[in-house]
Image (cartoon, rainbow, N blue to C red):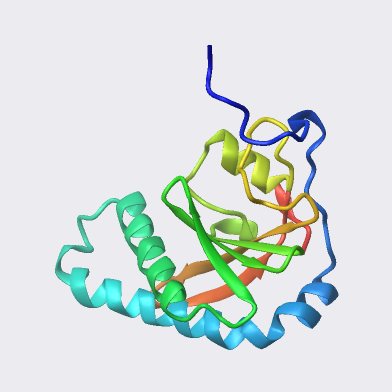
Length: 171
């Protein structure tokens, strides 16, 4: 006998809502300064502690370390009206029933980089057809709070919010 189901919904029909960039700006723009501050502080903290080892550190190691730092910085600064929950050791930030933010390093074309799991694939498509993440409202839109290392200036990354929708962002 297997474990009990994590929810009563039918995972075969679980597609997250896609909202517009205008809706995100209207509902989340008050939080943007906190997101930028947290990402900037986390990247600076990581580089301050790892500068000497950065030249031989694998990209995935560096990305995971920075993502962990961003998660910690955001937990310290959780904006009013948002909550944080950890799923599979990854912090997710919830803004009401409409938005879930997941931290990611972004690569070319503003897509997430380095992580090819079924969960990431489904989140890229704003769909959870093949996996279940209990607690994510079916009305939510998944967003990536992401950063891009700038050539020659990895300590000051570009920070953005991206709405994934398959192989290219919706916005």
